[in-house]
Structure formats: C-alpha cells, structure tokens
Length: 179
Image 1 (cartoon, rainbow, N blue to C red):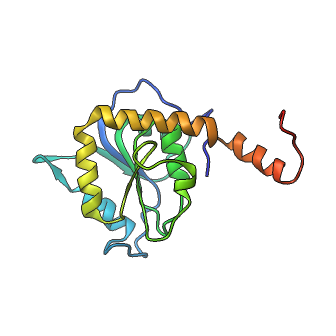
Image 2: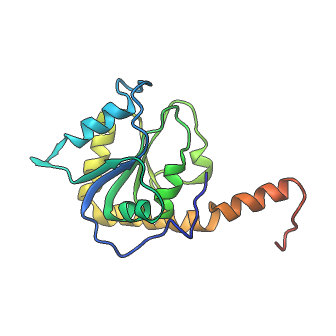
C-alpha cells in the first residue's frame, strides 16, 4: 500500500470531528465479537465524557473530499477485515492524519513499513483496546499530532506510489540507482 501525495496531504483545516471512517460497512466477518459495521455503529453511539462524538461515517466519498474529511478528524482508524494493510492506512497517514490500526495475531507487514507508536498506533482489534487508545489520544493532542506528522514525513519519504512504481521497475531491472 502507498498513497498519492498529489491528493492526500495535510491542510490547515480545523479538526472539528473526533473521528472519521470512510469505507465499506462489512456486516459478515466477525472479528473480536463484532463485524466492522457493528464496530463503527458502537463507536458512533459511544459517549465520551457524557457527550456524543462528532464524526463522519460513510462511503462513496472520493478525491479531495476524502482528504478534507481526514484533515478535519482528530482520529482516524482502520479496522481491516482480515488483518491486512488497507489502502486507508496509507491515505490517512499521507493526509497527515493520526491513525489507529487493528493488529492481529498474524503479522500484516505493517511493521516493515512503519513503527507502532511513532508513525501510527496499533490496537488489538477489540473495541475495548480501541476505546482505551482512542480516549488517550483524544486527550493527548500533542502526542497525537507528533505521531501524525512523523507518520506523514515517513510515508512521504518511503511510501508514495512513485516509490512503489520505482520498486517494481527495479525488480524487473528497468531502472538504475540514479533514477
């Protein structure tokens, strides 16, 4: 996975949403007792300090609108269905957003791309672990922003589509070191 830096980038948008989830609301695969749809619904009705969370949950959002929503959000998350690295993770980090990513018992390869706690934050896939980390990072803005910016810088230097294309071309012997 990678991201397109021409679309996903930090903006100076005010962070008026506690979280955003853009994606398919899978209601088939159960992981830690909840489907992705149930997980998102539970989070959407969650009360933080007695207040409803401000959020955007939806699908069918594309282009600059996605980047705008990512930039308006304090916390973004990925709840992949099969413990893989989804495109959402790269897009969120590429936009300069803070992301919580579910981790499974099987290594998804994310540790080869970035460092947990430095470029992103992992949770064990359960709603309880997610909420504990979600609340912590809502309350710790500086740490959240530091991780988001470190992730963005790292992904910009290592995980854009240009990096992926050059790597593929190199695998086929179609580039040299000066490219």
